[in-house]
Image 1 (tube, rainbow, N blue to C red):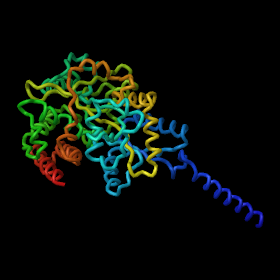
Image 2: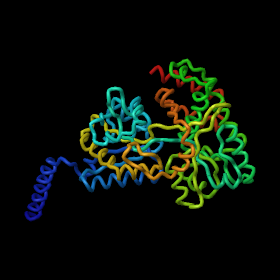
Image 3: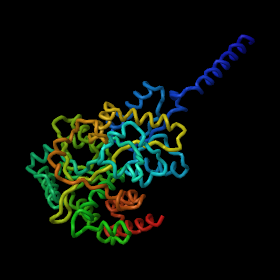
Image 4: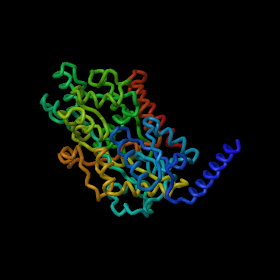
Length: 418
């Protein structure tokens, strides 16, 4: 018994000594309780793998471990809850809201080494007039509509530049495939994929056509939401014509990759990693991308872009120095290149040249202007959820297009007043 007691005493004393020594560390600890917390909104496996790989490399180099989280569709809700208690993760993705939503919670990164290579194109959305930089940009968004390039070639379909041409293209796909290929495939079990469609199409509907430009009214709160009704009418019409997948409300994002690789889908709205994932499954399929078609006659197409994925540091983090150390680590050119290439989007810093899956398509449409995400400029915070819920209700016949517009107006006014 005395021997056991003596052994236990030695163990306890050893642990106390180790704990005391650990308290003097300035580089962090690999223990999970001391790990940096990182939350990201990325959804594709290639993107997740790249972030996890760099987190592991950072730990190996510094001894600082990182607890990496990908909440998926619950990302915004989790971040809102944590904002309310001022308990945000040490590192998190601002997903387009670096200044307007998260501005008061993030540390200023303007004193960091990577800033000398900050892409000026990102300054309007990540840097304020006082010079504060709110987040490190992993990549830059350049969203349009993705398509099955060999399939469109096989059917002799010219790339659409207007919504009417796009409808004709989808009708051709339906006819020539005998209904075997879905013209537009939406994984609506994730309601935010429906929101993505509505958000991207809001720009050509309400901004880029001279005779249908409602920028001023949207910004001052006087917008007449009956002008939005043609968009839910358009989406509902596609469903009624059989141009979108019948299982739109239950279909998943994982299916989207598989079906495109099986040559069963023509058009999708998806992130940059979608194309490489499809081609990896089927090397014969090349995913192309086109700017969003013009909604009104005489208007121009547009890319939808701006901030896509970032890392910001929580200003009240107890591990702020370590969090900024990780940002400096991922901003090293070789690491920044890995992240940009995993997302198949341009890097957010200028000293990185990433090989991009879509380069030939971006070059072909280089003359097309980039417009910011509609909701980030013209709508109050919280409207992304309204896009999503009203879109699902529209496609499940719970709301008419007119009722969708009424709900959008009601929530727009309510959220503006908060």
